[in-house]
Image 1 (spheres, rainbow, N blue to C red):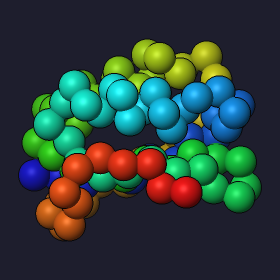
Image 2 (cartoon, rainbow, N blue to C red):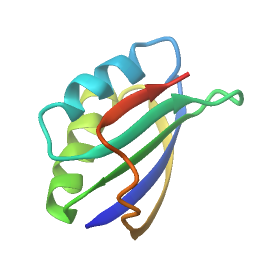
Image 3 (cartoon, one colour):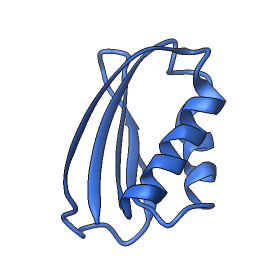
Length: 89
């Protein structure tokens, strides 16, 4: 199990990013959250099997790639602290 934290920048707020990412997550075995940051970026935290995270993050990129200018990603062992996938406000 792995944890990935991704910061997306570009035109990623006000385009349905969080809601659509929540819908995408429902099709994968991942937990975590997505949130808007005050600086205009979107922060995604996801935990799950490595291959599942690969597929999930590719699906997000496939849907929003034309809005994303840059990403910063870190990987770590999963904390197993999430019961599901949510939007943080």
